[in-house]
Image (cartoon, rainbow, N blue to C red; front, side):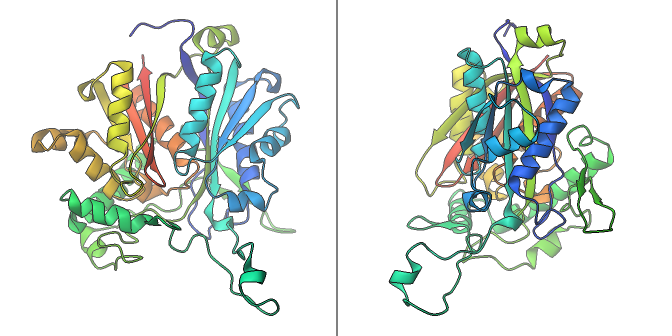
Length: 407
């Protein structure tokens, strides 16, 4: 595919370190995390605030946004010093939210409705409040104490089931055992730690200064909090399953996390005008949805749909990122993509999540899509260029896939 002036290109990227549940970022509002990320993107690109036309922000757990009076994107961009005229959009497509934000930025650029756009994803799962259902007073006791509800407890969706149960059951239906999921989880930690030791993540992460209280120096948070170099399959095997799932455990699923990620995108022509070197071309961001129960399946048909649209094949993909919402996702999806051929499946798995994934470093649900997208880009850059695809599943079996090209 030849380059042209209207290509959508990435010219800047940044993410916070991903924090664990109850970690140092537990009280930092999502709007603040998004603000810090915008500031870092401007710093890294050298762009003036006046150049940014719009900010599209993905966020999943909107109950946490409600504690900040919503409109997180608008709050963040204003506090980061962008123009009051800068347009914004908040997007909830579950875990697909940040890639859908990138899709919106892509569309705005292609349609000529923006020249420079920021796509963001953010989530602070530690800051999600306990709540009373809206009708609690009238459906329960009219007066007196009431029981709070924890939205994070089983991460289920009323009327549709619990995500961990769906993923575990579907994994077994595709011949993906608990042992295979534990092995993939241990692989994730091992590969992540090896990549971190080699400095492969340093270009993505920027350090946060977390206020520590009156008279105390701020806490410097500059590394992902969850990876464990000592994880073993044997230790994984001893963990109990969760929420009634037949295979999913706290070990082969990521923790509840906090973090933000962002990309600056523009056209190739505009990048040249601004004196910025394109880091990657965003060929397409494709969305898909299937039966709500099949969340472990959806990355595969989403990738297939995206490849068909851009007229490329799996063999053209030098590397693949599939978000590890559970270990079941990359395992089931690569089996489907490999069409049951063990040699092809193994080949696909060997180039999937080669630096580990969310099981190791965490899954702040609104931010993970852009995290895997920027990491895909950086893998391709260190491999000398080529094509790659990043795919993520979202609640009720939605999917997004991003096709990148690095020259």
